[in-house]
Amino acid sequence: MLATYFIPALAPAESVSSDFATRTELLAIDTLTLSDAQFLAGDSNAKAAITTGLFRIASGVGRLPVVVLQHGSGGMGGNIEMWARELNAMGVSTLALDGFTGRGLSSVNTNQGALGRLNFILDIYRALDVLAKHLRVDPQRIVLMGFSRGGQATLYASLKRFHKMWNKSGIEFAAYIPFYPDCATTFISDTDVADRPIRIFGGTLDDYNPIALCKPYAERLKAAGHDVQVTEYATAPHAFDNPLGPIPAAVVANAQTVRHCMIVEEPAGVLINASTRRPFTYKDPCVELNPRVGYDAASTEAAKRSVKEFLKVVFKL
Image (cartoon, rainbow, N blue to C red; front, side, top):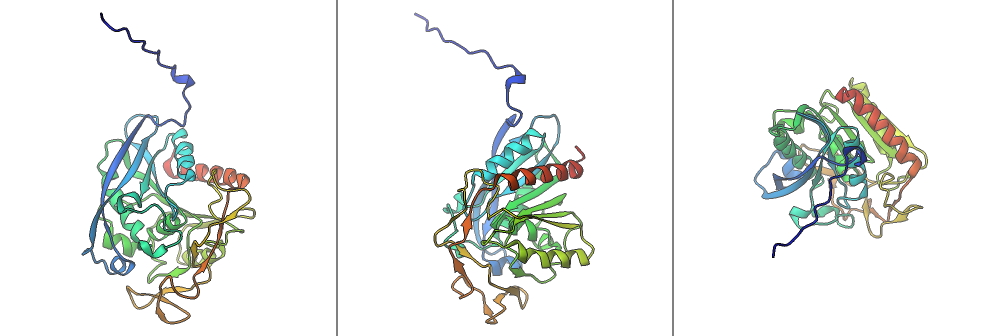
């Protein structure tokens, strides 16, 4: 006797949420796991690694604009999913990079030294290698957006020096959008950045990566003739755009913050604690614990509007 199967009718297109990706792909990214010293020296004699990126292709035909999303110290949180859906809904594909799982990590909040802080920049450039060859990607319309540790990577991935050493893809980002980045480090030639707009977002209540540390760097970039803006939200703590974050903000027990450190690259390739004049480590007295994170709906909605308006201009949507 033949079995009978019920095949449900497909839902009409108009009933499907606009933030659905039309296709998802898990992309393998060949990269390296290296120290900050190796990264700064351009030393590729490091352990090979394979990380992944979740590529969500938005509705549309042909080559589409893409936003690369780089998570922070806690891994792929709810904000990554939220931004992917928001961007997909406006016809922009997203590539969410997972810099941890392939390296056997899930979080580095309490041990920032477990992975070089500049390693994400290499991962990001290696992701460009993959996107440059993808038939559904417009290589001239790729924007980088990152959060916390990923925001730091996003901000400093703009340095021409780093591009020259590590970006072999043949393409550049159209813009950089760092959310609450760590701006406690001054790198050599850090005002010589790509001729692309940079938009920094953060909150006044952020005691993890204070937005106040980013303002002097932004002013130095402006003085060097670059298109940089800092947007500060008065009620926003760290990770304010994560809809799964606590309300009010809560302590991340034993998480490490360099909010009171001054880190300088001096000499080239060596990051030192400016106060001690010794190589910086996460055992330095300036490293503090127990910063707070939390969701702020009003700031998130404002940030969504600003980012979308910016991307419409950059992508010519």
